[in-house]
Length: 233
Image (cartoon, rainbow, N blue to C red; front, side):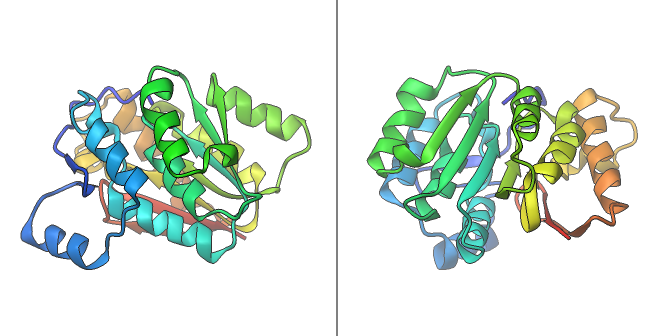
């Protein structure tokens, strides 16, 4: 959940989180976005939080939850929970025996945001919240024999560790499973060579890594703040 950038220009309402609030964006939302009551409640509650810009865009999240539904995902990973919106969105489309392993470095939002929303959607039983360092949790899963048993992973946490998260998730995801990475355009800062902050450098590193990675199929989309989708071969 550690995102120290000053990028804050997202619009968050109970009807969705958008990167830009243009007429085109509103049209797309009006003709595509479907939010559950629990999602609307959580967005409305989150919008006044000073860190609301942490939220993944609603259109991105809907695309990813649709992908989970399409591949009949059961075991999933969400790295970077914040107020629980991405975890909720994934859990809502999983079958009754599905699970979201929700990894977060802090539980500051768990009691007042995450759990009420998850209970409202009746998906709390599908969510396994793990407090702690995500790299260690992922490595523990590998050490415990869970490599290639997960269907989907979303990476949306501290940018400095993006390459580490990617490599660990690639071991855990099954062939033809999906890894999604948010903020890969970083409001255009990835192409600003004067920006050498650790967050921007971390995103550039993972973008370069994936671009040359023959272990996966790749699409980098100009959606939200930039979304990379990889499919493991």
